Image (cartoon, rainbow, N blue to C red; front, side, top):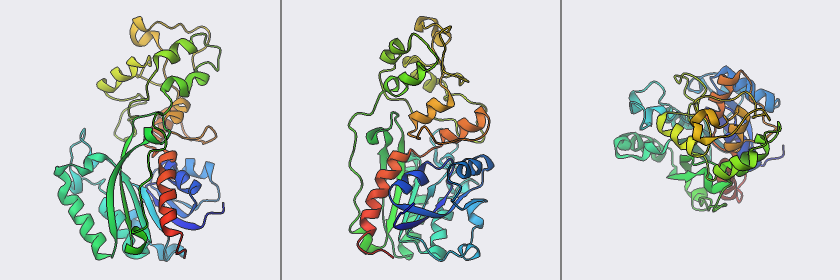
Length: 325
């Protein structure tokens, strides 16, 4: 890969953000995650990446010959700030937001890009943001928070991400957020019609006509979440409106023996496979996700969609381009 800039990715998960940034011209010198399934997935897709299975709070750049990078990027677990969770913030053991910013003390990256839940911008977490911003100011960065929805960047899903971009003043003066690139993403039916028909299911066209909106936010990636289904009761109802049985995942697309009758409820409509959920997350068809069905789904459910990461990455690269290291 011939990217002009270097990056270090923390909380990399299945690699959605790293993949999008790679497309935008960033070559990761190190990719870190503490989940063994995620690390196997990363190595399966990018054998040349230096993937470290560890807690990034224990990472010391000097131990790996890294003194600085152009971009420190990563995903921060959303559960400490989630509306659906206990909202423990910095009291939650999974709070890695401040730890991610502290890593910048050693690495002194030109840019920081962190992704988490939009709930972080609620008044309840004003103190969390204040502490992070105080450290950024101390390090000489300018910063901005923003919420972008992946459906506006070609992803057939409503998926809002809170993004923090921090840069040194000269670079930040050149940075702009990416504009909406797709006013209307594909519907679930348009995105998955061919996949649903791949095993001879005769009702794929009729199903696609009912699956006439983008998908609700895909959830279920928490390590504390039980099995492979598409979310809580309210979300399952939204999927049922799209003629999808969200109570579990299928092993294969429906075949010619499977009927289609939404009047029967969940028993009359198809389930999604992990590969189909990958399409709704904007992952490419050739991206390998390792493990069994539940392990694969939990990885996929946490993905930062690559098309959105790529769009933001291009704008970061444009801000850095006049003064490459």
